[in-house]
Amino acid sequence: MSVSQEVSKDGKKVHINISGRFDYKVSQEFRDSYRRVPGQDSVSYYVDLSDAVYMDSSALGMLLLLREHAKCRGGAVYIERPSKQIDNILKVANFEQLFTINYTCSADPSVAEDAGMEH
Image 1 (cartoon, helix red, strand yellow):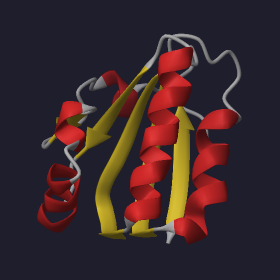
Image 2 (cartoon, helix red, strand yellow):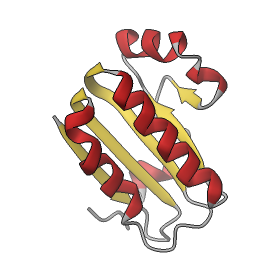
Image 3 (cartoon, helix red, strand yellow):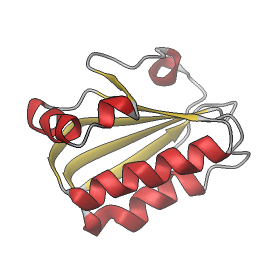
Image 4 (spheres, one colour):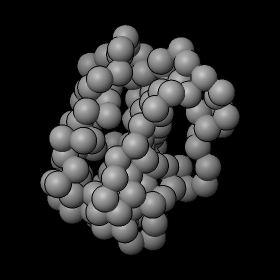
């Protein structure tokens, strides 16, 4: 299980990748991945779930907390490339009504291509 984060040079795009199990064991690491971003106004968060193999109810709660964090600061959250199993969980929880879910590559290609990304 692992949470990694990349921030664009301008600090307005945060790409968070979850690999392995997305559950309560990564909750602090996940929160740190977005709370420690300087200048958090109007930030777009892209949560890549393509490498996640499991998600439980605590992960759903973490996504809701991120959504609230972004919303309070004028930002947005995008869920990227969930596996079929994880997508089913998101649909059962009606998360497609709360989040934009992208099934291919990032909605903003500059997130991955931005040479100014930092870990």
